[in-house]
Image (cartoon, rainbow, N blue to C red; front, side, top):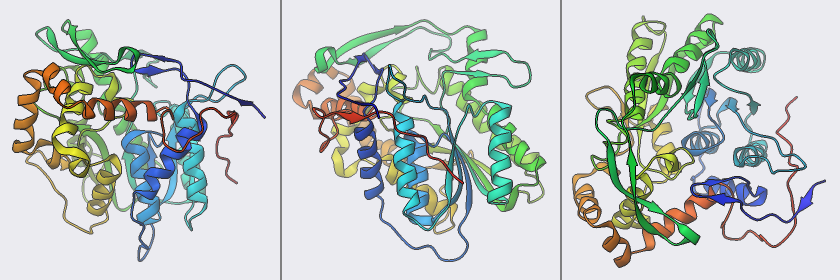
Length: 400
């Protein structure tokens, strides 16, 4: 037992510890926001990479709740110790496993670096022994670095513009109060661009698909998707036109490479999925995204906002064939129409022209963003007693 009272250790957009009960409550609330249904016919086998956070976790919860998916989730999380709590994803995975155990499905979790060859072997051995061929491979990884499994070279991603310096408004929270600041970034050099592509592009996604094919684990009608983002022209200089955007273009090109290569001749389908805006641990690291997201939420309000769970439900409906794929001219599945609606974007642009005045007139969006950010680590979640001692030594889900 490791009962203790804990308080958040926060610095900017990073919180060094997480609250187990808060993380579990976030998972429970997401689960309850997804309308359940009883699927007909065979339940699909899913390999989900990046199952402990953001879009990946919501896709997992929606898949369990509405499609009774079976399979394996892979995430790389830190265990609790005597000196520190586990990572938020550790506690979210434990809570997700409890919910999954209450269903008629069979879903298990592997804690490993998905970029490594060992993780691929471990996950695929488990799939072969326990589940059989995979119907869906969901790739939802976001990481700051990747070690090439062949060369051993460590690549570090950077968030920088390409070509020109970037200067724009940003949202900061000194003492928890929303303030508009300024961010300035120098352009990435070629080495930084290549490294970011190696981390956030499609190289690892391709390795996973090829590994499944080599093991004879591609199911009939196999489909794989990788999560991507386009976003607004407001954030394009630092995102879509920057190093991360270039990596996402590589990810999208990889979908075509897979379709023309290992998945050719009816072996399967590969798509990138352009999701809408969200508050995730990955998105909070991108300059100006917090301010843009806050203003977007002011425009849309709670009823117009599409949560990651809402988007996950939409994605599964398309993957399951319940409704047609919503594809753009590049063949990408689109979930972001609600965000990029021109009337919505026009309103956001007007607010962006003077964000200080916009937040003074309507601070709700920034307050909402801050609460959402803190909840990523299990803090400020309604209904959780933060004054009580909490068990931090939560075990990773075991399976027989």
